[in-house]
Image (cartoon, rainbow, N blue to C red):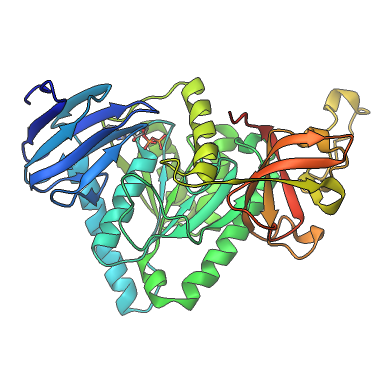
Length: 423
Ligand code: ADP
């Protein structure tokens, strides 16, 4: 590696099978160019001489056959390594590719692959790599993100899916043109596991229909990302997703115990499911709780302003009485200690309650529903989100940020249970 000159531009040579790991903080950018050879960022190939901006990201530039790169700017951390699981990941892709080809021949459904493991083992990264390799091989896989804590497709709190037709853009991330989105309104399924299960079932039903209507989508299969909660209720929810989305390949990343528990259990209950274990890449960066929280806020900002602040969201004011805002759950369940002996709390976790006090919506995200009537709010996907910036109780108005100007596609809104403070 040559050090950065006074111009801040340096050339780097990557040997075959090596990767360059870089961390660039939020609010900062470095630019990368492939000068010679071939290289990819999590499966997305770099074009020769194309200048790619890396900002607020931790990435690895991997080269199968070696390359020369040019770097402008100073990453906060940078080093190379040849200890990567890329060969194992490619093997997995080859296996999935063979299954997709069989599926196309037999007019069947391609593999539905669920990536599971604890937080910060590279699950989302492996999903990206497998999606990109599938696209590069001519498939149109569906990506489904069940990780409501981070929410890579829209905002946190969502279960969502999107078809992936082109390699994932290194700067802009996943395509967001036509995602199928369901809003749980919380970053943790423990707040309302029944709602989480319900929405996973809704998503599965719609994805089944989509797969039936398009042979290419059907043969391409799905790649599903999971949340990093793998014990107790988290483990039960993983099994629920495997069953509901009819996953037939489960990739367990970086956790022997989870692998042995899941493979043992699935061998007995569903022997046709292939459970494979994969190592965690040494390059994966572990994030603190605070960083994860900060990442959630960044995701919400990106939803409205774009990754590179290229969008201009509109701030608008509406009369609260013109909106129908609902929340899920009839309030907190009574603790069992407050109930007569032997009685259990019967609060319906899917009960919808109309919000009558606009003040409680301040700094929350509201999902704009496609549902034709309130009773269907939890059965129909959402069109998008608005963020409540201000409430004027005296005038009875709320001021909100929307991705674009103009009237909302619906006045039926679902309120989230967490607050995000955008600057
Ligand atoms: P998980 O989904 O398991 O929580 P991620 O895939 O989101 O983990 O990875 C955590 C962080 O590590 C992400 O910022 C990701 O870009 C980064 N990362 C993953 N693999 C590498 C690698 N090989 N080199 C550098 N950074 C990486």
